[in-house]
Length: 376
Ligand SMILES: *Cc1c(COP(=O)(O)O)cnc(C)c1O
Picture 1: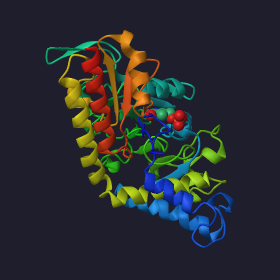
Picture 2: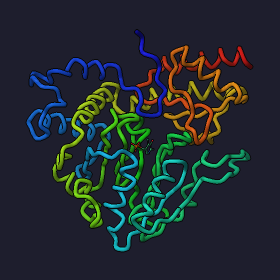
Picture 3: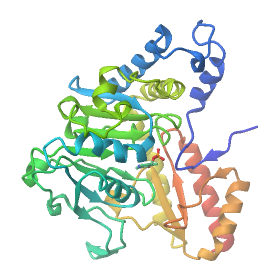
């Protein structure tokens, strides 16, 4: 049976060759006679798997030695609590700033409020006009020179790709230009991690739940500058204290071993695609194809300000919303799965992560054109 095209926002499609390798190695990893699921997390086989995954990720993103790479549990929402527990008190009175650009950054802000004093440095949660164009809330990014960052904040958090609203940052700002050189960036990069080059040294900490673009659910990647580690609040569970996790190379307690193994295979796959630069070229081609079609018709519409449209998550609405159910039913019949938009925004969403080939986007656009011909 042919695999359908899976446009799920997460957990999402994995590269087929990775799944095949996992299947081939399921009962016997590399002559060990064991499945990775059955291995001691302190045995030589798993230590090799875990350290190789870390080394490959370090190479892919050019992560310097003064940054720790950690494979943790708890997902993106877990990090919304784990980051403040580790960082918010590092400069004395707990304080952290947030830039709100949609659902996920708003969730992060709310969660951090349980651990200290939080402040909204900027928000796109209101309508505005850009270049004469009306922009609805959460369809744009506040210009960096309007961010009001407190100089004493422990960090400034933003979400570099808003998975639900389809808004992506193309650059990470330099807060020295805002008079806050001692405020490190904390970046939730969950849904575009490894989709493009990222200058990790611009940030103090980057985290990503693997299940969007980097592997299966269960492992969360955290990359943190080492000087920020080691000042966790007393309430921080020791298993979630970055100082412990980094010192033990992600093996302070039993890590999500199988998920780390599969993520490691995805890292190898990304390397074989030309690394993150190769991924970026492929992702650009897919996004250009889909947005190009969306902009050529009045039948569908993407509401996001052009320069910050996500290459990963493409929300769109039908002009006639009464056709939504028919659109989704026809899409499934054509082997195009999981196109329903998030309930908070409605409409449709096509997530076109790394593992989605250009052919899948061609199939989607062909279906959308055909649907428009029949209903337009
Ligand atoms: C999916 C997602 C999350 C939540 O991740 P969980 O692993 O479900 O906790 C957080 N942030 C972003 C940007 C996401 O896309």
